Length: 388
Image (cartoon, rainbow, N blue to C red; front, side, top):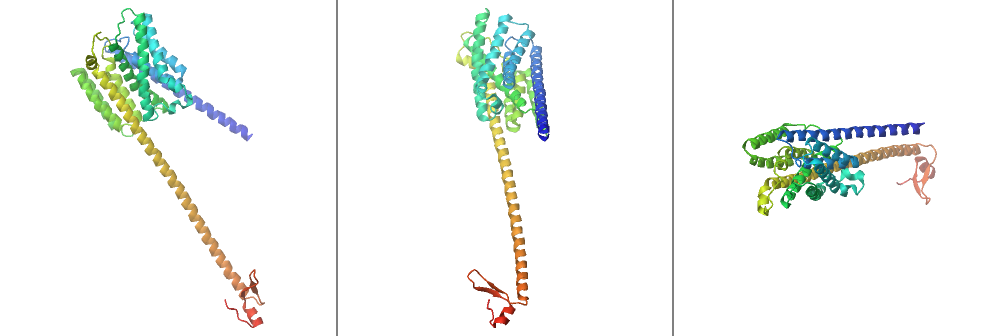
């Protein structure tokens, strides 16, 4: 009966855990959908959506959904892409929508196949788990963007008569895609791994100051030109050095969404543009990519340091507890020995007093039949005196 009750309790706990996990997954999906919808509204309010403008964000969101929910997440990402195409009115028609879906699917698969190839249960402990994994993540972002943009350009050139993509525009789209992936994916992935809504900081003053600085820089950029956005490098350094791993990813995502050059630079570039001209044209985007990748990597290094320090502190506390426990056991053993010795000494005194006061001769001998002790009656009877 007891075993049946324990099995029932274990089953109830497991079902409760599954229900809570499902609820959190639903919260995650709702958050991602709302996140994407708000972004599309913001970009649309700035003068209309270009068919390519939202692709980078949707690719990053699709990677996060597929990483969390597998094939179901990938289908959700494709559904978001189709919904975004519906919002834009299928600017390039059905073939353009198919190219967008191909882009989202190829980016997600090339990004996550190295992780899905291993045990899926351990994925959450590998992606962005350390500075080494963060480096691999950035490398995969570049690789997946190159592949997915290549397929997108190929399908667009085949299916769209007015499509005119060159190598310079291809590289620009790769850069824009990488910026969105490394800017958005870490936030969504780490938020999902936390398995809870992020707690507010104990002292929000610094976070508030950071947000106010970002708003001020945004207004300066709108009023006096995008050159003011270079100050965002200071904000990223600030977030990297002062915020937590999740806080840095949140700061990177906010700046990427609202100030990133990925949604401002034109992807239509001249056919004969040279390398130096391309670098000058895309300097802001290149700078943003290197700033984002560098801040993400150094934030992961600091997270590694904090994790090591935390583990070391826990280990020291554990060893201190073990030593305290051993010390208490030793003190208890010493006290026990002292008690036993005092008891033996008391017993020995009583034994000697009993022998000495006995009215009959008492002789104590050892194993070799040598006399060890005798009492006063023995001395009186034998006439010999005992010398101790």
